[in-house]
Length: 249
Image (cartoon, rainbow, N blue to C red; front, side, top):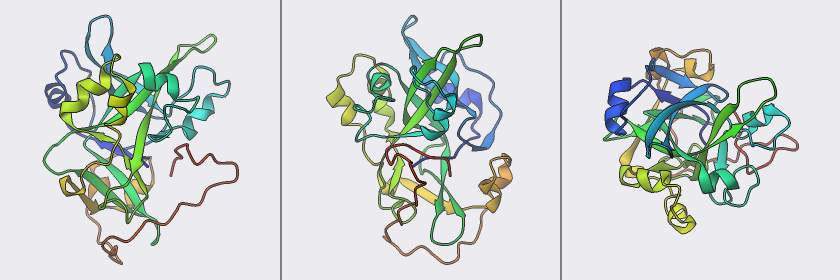
Protein backbone atom coordinates (compact mmCIF):
# COMPACT_ATOMS: atom_id res chain seq x y z
CA UNK A 1 0.00 0.00 0.00
CA UNK A 2 1.03 3.60 -0.38
CA UNK A 3 -0.72 6.26 1.69
CA UNK A 4 1.88 8.96 2.34
CA UNK A 5 4.86 10.21 0.28
CA UNK A 6 7.65 12.80 0.32
CA UNK A 7 8.89 15.08 -2.45
CA UNK A 8 11.48 17.59 -1.27
CA UNK A 9 13.78 17.47 -4.31
CA UNK A 10 14.13 20.86 -6.10
CA UNK A 11 11.97 21.31 -9.20
CA UNK A 12 15.03 21.83 -11.41
CA UNK A 13 16.41 18.44 -10.39
CA UNK A 14 13.03 16.83 -11.02
CA UNK A 15 12.91 18.36 -14.52
CA UNK A 16 16.42 17.15 -15.26
CA UNK A 17 15.83 13.63 -13.97
CA UNK A 18 12.56 13.15 -15.85
CA UNK A 19 13.64 15.04 -18.98
CA UNK A 20 11.00 17.76 -18.76
CA UNK A 21 11.19 20.91 -20.86
CA UNK A 22 8.77 22.83 -18.59
CA UNK A 23 8.06 22.51 -14.91
CA UNK A 24 6.23 24.15 -12.03
CA UNK A 25 7.75 25.68 -8.88
CA UNK A 26 7.41 23.06 -6.14
CA UNK A 27 7.85 23.64 -2.43
CA UNK A 28 9.54 20.81 -0.50
CA UNK A 29 6.94 18.51 1.06
CA UNK A 30 7.67 15.82 3.63
CA UNK A 31 4.22 14.41 4.35
CA UNK A 32 1.97 14.37 1.27
CA UNK A 33 -1.38 12.71 1.99
CA UNK A 34 -4.36 11.52 -0.06
CA UNK A 35 -6.85 14.15 -1.32
CA UNK A 36 -3.96 16.63 -1.62
CA UNK A 37 -2.52 17.72 -4.96
CA UNK A 38 0.60 15.84 -6.03
CA UNK A 39 3.12 16.27 -8.85
CA UNK A 40 2.78 13.62 -11.55
CA UNK A 41 4.17 13.21 -15.05
CA UNK A 42 2.03 12.20 -18.00
CA UNK A 43 2.35 12.17 -21.76
CA UNK A 44 0.98 15.18 -23.61
CA UNK A 45 -0.53 13.65 -26.79
CA UNK A 46 -0.62 16.96 -28.67
CA UNK A 47 3.02 17.85 -28.10
CA UNK A 48 4.22 14.25 -27.84
CA UNK A 49 6.29 14.97 -24.75
CA UNK A 50 6.15 14.56 -21.01
CA UNK A 51 4.40 17.19 -18.91
CA UNK A 52 4.29 17.88 -15.19
CA UNK A 53 0.79 18.23 -13.73
CA UNK A 54 -0.64 18.71 -10.24
CA UNK A 55 -3.40 16.15 -9.66
CA UNK A 56 -5.55 15.23 -6.69
CA UNK A 57 -4.54 12.00 -4.96
CA UNK A 58 -7.49 9.59 -5.00
CA UNK A 59 -8.91 8.66 -8.39
CA UNK A 60 -12.45 9.81 -9.14
CA UNK A 61 -13.95 7.78 -12.02
CA UNK A 62 -15.80 9.63 -14.77
CA UNK A 63 -19.03 7.90 -13.83
CA UNK A 64 -18.84 8.61 -10.09
CA UNK A 65 -21.71 10.64 -8.63
CA UNK A 66 -20.10 10.98 -5.19
CA UNK A 67 -16.71 12.73 -5.40
CA UNK A 68 -15.72 11.35 -2.01
CA UNK A 69 -15.08 7.97 -3.68
CA UNK A 70 -11.62 9.33 -4.45
CA UNK A 71 -10.55 8.99 -0.81
CA UNK A 72 -11.15 5.23 -1.13
CA UNK A 73 -9.28 4.89 -4.43
CA UNK A 74 -5.84 6.14 -3.47
CA UNK A 75 -4.36 2.76 -4.49
CA UNK A 76 -5.20 0.18 -7.14
CA UNK A 77 -4.14 -3.46 -6.97
CA UNK A 78 -2.00 -4.20 -10.03
CA UNK A 79 -3.33 -7.77 -10.24
CA UNK A 80 -6.89 -6.59 -10.96
CA UNK A 81 -6.46 -3.07 -12.33
CA UNK A 82 -7.31 -4.07 -15.90
CA UNK A 83 -10.68 -5.51 -14.82
CA UNK A 84 -11.97 -3.08 -12.17
CA UNK A 85 -14.53 -0.57 -13.56
CA UNK A 86 -12.90 2.32 -11.69
CA UNK A 87 -9.49 1.74 -13.26
CA UNK A 88 -9.65 -0.26 -16.50
CA UNK A 89 -10.10 2.66 -18.93
CA UNK A 90 -7.37 4.68 -17.24
CA UNK A 91 -5.09 1.64 -17.34
CA UNK A 92 -5.57 1.50 -21.11
CA UNK A 93 -5.27 5.21 -21.88
CA UNK A 94 -4.24 7.43 -18.94
CA UNK A 95 -1.10 6.26 -17.18
CA UNK A 96 1.26 8.53 -15.27
CA UNK A 97 4.41 8.61 -13.17
CA UNK A 98 3.85 9.62 -9.54
CA UNK A 99 7.00 11.47 -8.46
CA UNK A 100 8.52 10.86 -5.03
CA UNK A 101 11.79 10.75 -3.18
CA UNK A 102 10.36 8.54 -0.45
CA UNK A 103 7.19 7.11 1.07
CA UNK A 104 6.04 6.07 4.52
CA UNK A 105 4.75 2.82 5.93
CA UNK A 106 3.72 2.04 9.50
CA UNK A 107 4.61 -0.85 11.76
CA UNK A 108 1.23 -2.26 12.76
CA UNK A 109 2.27 -4.42 15.70
CA UNK A 110 3.64 -1.66 17.94
CA UNK A 111 1.58 1.51 17.96
CA UNK A 112 2.13 3.77 14.96
CA UNK A 113 5.87 3.73 14.30
CA UNK A 114 6.42 5.22 10.85
CA UNK A 115 9.24 4.25 8.51
CA UNK A 116 10.57 6.33 5.64
CA UNK A 117 11.36 4.17 2.62
CA UNK A 118 13.36 5.21 -0.41
CA UNK A 119 15.54 3.99 -3.27
CA UNK A 120 19.22 3.74 -2.28
CA UNK A 121 21.06 5.18 -5.25
CA UNK A 122 18.63 7.83 -6.49
CA UNK A 123 17.12 10.97 -4.99
CA UNK A 124 14.01 10.43 -7.08
CA UNK A 125 11.86 7.56 -8.29
CA UNK A 126 8.51 7.11 -10.00
CA UNK A 127 5.56 5.00 -8.94
CA UNK A 128 3.14 3.63 -11.53
CA UNK A 129 -0.04 5.68 -11.53
CA UNK A 130 -3.32 6.10 -13.39
CA UNK A 131 -5.11 9.39 -13.84
CA UNK A 132 -8.65 10.45 -14.66
CA UNK A 133 -10.55 13.63 -15.55
CA UNK A 134 -13.98 14.10 -14.01
CA UNK A 135 -16.33 16.81 -15.32
CA UNK A 136 -18.21 18.64 -12.57
CA UNK A 137 -21.32 20.75 -13.12
CA UNK A 138 -20.69 24.50 -12.71
CA UNK A 139 -17.08 23.92 -11.67
CA UNK A 140 -13.67 23.14 -13.07
CA UNK A 141 -13.04 19.48 -13.99
CA UNK A 142 -11.18 17.45 -11.37
CA UNK A 143 -8.07 15.57 -12.43
CA UNK A 144 -7.11 12.83 -10.02
CA UNK A 145 -4.86 9.79 -9.81
CA UNK A 146 -4.18 6.52 -8.01
CA UNK A 147 -0.97 4.62 -7.21
CA UNK A 148 -0.68 0.99 -8.28
CA UNK A 149 0.44 -1.54 -5.67
CA UNK A 150 1.91 -5.03 -5.76
CA UNK A 151 3.14 -7.69 -3.35
CA UNK A 152 5.66 -6.34 -0.85
CA UNK A 153 9.32 -7.26 -1.23
CA UNK A 154 11.42 -8.73 1.59
CA UNK A 155 12.24 -5.30 3.05
CA UNK A 156 8.64 -4.11 3.24
CA UNK A 157 6.96 -7.42 4.13
CA UNK A 158 7.43 -7.00 7.92
CA UNK A 159 5.46 -3.75 7.70
CA UNK A 160 2.75 -4.47 5.14
CA UNK A 161 1.85 -7.10 2.56
CA UNK A 162 1.63 -4.47 -0.24
CA UNK A 163 3.95 -1.83 -1.66
CA UNK A 164 3.75 0.73 -4.49
CA UNK A 165 4.86 -0.35 -7.96
CA UNK A 166 8.17 1.46 -8.47
CA UNK A 167 9.22 1.65 -12.10
CA UNK A 168 12.79 1.43 -13.36
CA UNK A 169 13.89 4.58 -15.29
CA UNK A 170 14.26 2.59 -18.50
CA UNK A 171 10.56 1.68 -18.25
CA UNK A 172 9.17 5.22 -17.92
CA UNK A 173 8.54 5.63 -21.64
CA UNK A 174 6.97 2.18 -21.88
CA UNK A 175 4.54 3.03 -19.08
CA UNK A 176 3.60 6.43 -20.49
CA UNK A 177 3.29 5.36 -24.12
CA UNK A 178 -0.46 5.09 -24.93
CA UNK A 179 0.32 2.40 -27.52
CA UNK A 180 2.05 -0.03 -25.14
CA UNK A 181 0.31 -3.41 -25.21
CA UNK A 182 -1.28 -4.78 -22.00
CA UNK A 183 1.15 -7.68 -21.74
CA UNK A 184 4.10 -5.26 -21.73
CA UNK A 185 2.40 -3.13 -19.08
CA UNK A 186 1.68 -6.13 -16.88
CA UNK A 187 5.35 -7.13 -17.02
CA UNK A 188 6.23 -3.87 -15.24
CA UNK A 189 3.84 -4.42 -12.32
CA UNK A 190 6.24 -6.18 -9.96
CA UNK A 191 7.99 -5.61 -6.65
CA UNK A 192 11.06 -3.39 -6.67
CA UNK A 193 14.22 -5.22 -5.52
CA UNK A 194 14.58 -5.09 -1.73
CA UNK A 195 18.37 -4.77 -1.97
CA UNK A 196 17.96 -1.47 -3.82
CA UNK A 197 15.85 0.13 -1.06
CA UNK A 198 16.33 1.39 2.49
CA UNK A 199 13.97 2.23 5.35
CA UNK A 200 14.45 4.27 8.52
CA UNK A 201 12.18 4.73 11.56
CA UNK A 202 11.16 8.39 11.77
CA UNK A 203 9.42 10.89 14.01
CA UNK A 204 5.82 10.42 15.10
CA UNK A 205 5.14 13.88 13.64
CA UNK A 206 4.46 12.17 10.31
CA UNK A 207 1.39 10.48 11.83
CA UNK A 208 -0.48 13.78 11.45
CA UNK A 209 -0.79 14.93 7.80
CA UNK A 210 -0.96 18.53 9.02
CA UNK A 211 2.78 18.28 9.73
CA UNK A 212 4.65 18.76 6.45
CA UNK A 213 8.06 20.04 7.57
CA UNK A 214 11.46 18.35 7.40
CA UNK A 215 11.09 17.36 11.06
CA UNK A 216 8.91 14.47 9.84
CA UNK A 217 12.13 12.75 8.75
CA UNK A 218 13.92 13.11 12.07
CA UNK A 219 15.21 9.64 13.08
CA UNK A 220 13.36 7.69 15.74
CA UNK A 221 14.60 4.70 17.71
CA UNK A 222 12.56 1.68 16.75
CA UNK A 223 11.54 -0.39 19.73
CA UNK A 224 11.05 -3.27 19.51
CA UNK A 225 12.98 -4.19 16.39
CA UNK A 226 11.13 -5.81 13.51
CA UNK A 227 12.14 -9.48 13.26
CA UNK A 228 13.95 -10.09 9.98
CA UNK A 229 11.57 -11.55 7.44
CA UNK A 230 8.57 -11.35 9.76
CA UNK A 231 5.32 -11.29 7.77
CA UNK A 232 3.07 -8.28 7.96
CA UNK A 233 -0.15 -8.58 9.89
CA UNK A 234 -3.24 -8.11 7.76
CA UNK A 235 -4.83 -4.69 8.35
CA UNK A 236 -8.35 -4.76 9.73
CA UNK A 237 -10.97 -3.61 7.26
CA UNK A 238 -14.03 -1.58 7.99
CA UNK A 239 -17.41 -3.08 7.34
CA UNK A 240 -18.20 -2.83 3.64
CA UNK A 241 -14.66 -1.90 2.63
CA UNK A 242 -13.54 -3.26 -0.74
CA UNK A 243 -10.25 -5.18 -0.29
CA UNK A 244 -9.24 -4.12 -3.82
CA UNK A 245 -9.33 -0.44 -2.97
CA UNK A 246 -6.68 1.56 -1.16
CA UNK A 247 -7.61 3.31 2.08
CA UNK A 248 -6.11 6.24 3.91
CA UNK A 249 -4.18 5.27 7.04
